[in-house]
Length: 409
Image (cartoon, rainbow, N blue to C red; front, side, top):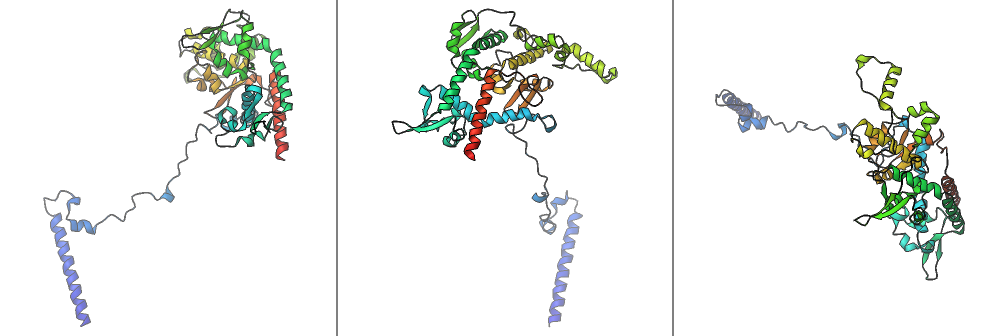
């Protein structure tokens, strides 16, 4: 009985298979059939492609490297990195709270500030938002102190030791006043309209060692400056007279001392084909013809065509002279952008400076880069000529950092 059932089921399957083959054959031989995809649904169900892998499994996919953010990407690659100069930028970050809080407290009545208010002024005092200001104050116990006032509130102020340092700094400001006036005069002489907003000079005063009360001091020099108020209410500092003796750049002075060194400061190469077959000396002479003469930063750059070689020479010269007037022979991007209109600079300043590695070193990150004047520093990263204000700042940093280490130990 079982054998008979097996034989009957086999015959039934064989019959179904033959019937299916006949249907497929008749469909394929039908002249009305246009494509293979128009075969009957029965055929399509027997040839399903759902088992095929149409996407590469995740474990076999190539991992794409994320593009580094300009906030963290360094300007210089590893072979060109100058560690001594990059260390100065790290020092700036480390002492940001010290420098900004010192400036802010110095402008407050009696040089004090309520601790509750200090915790809300993260931008003005230079500490990250959401962090407790007390932790940053405790890093510099010889500079800042927290004490109870008669109103029962906690207040932030300077220590007695810091008060003595501030008096020393004030004496330096007085001694260097004439030199700071000369710096401001040269800045005005380089500017397009021989005038600069007082607010811009104030925002960048630490760059040049200009004192906090310089707006009161310039009144004593009517032969050099005049304060005018524009229609929009902006106060401008204007140059009264032009002094040709001051219109000599640092590069021109260097040219008189060491002509060969000054000639190598900048490079504006001439594009030429390989057919010329120039050797190294011939190429250097050809580039020198294109580089010289340089354009004085005290000339009127607004009259030059924006994208000409002469205009680029002018802009490079302006930045060189600008850096030579600073205390530490360096400036951040925001310092240069502040004077963009006055000095006829363009948005391509970053790329322009990268093309002059002999004279300028760009450090930091692509979003917050700093340009150094190479000739202002020795091989070990120290300033060759230190202003008295720089000497004082370095002493202040040593005291603050030393006390911070002692406090942590």
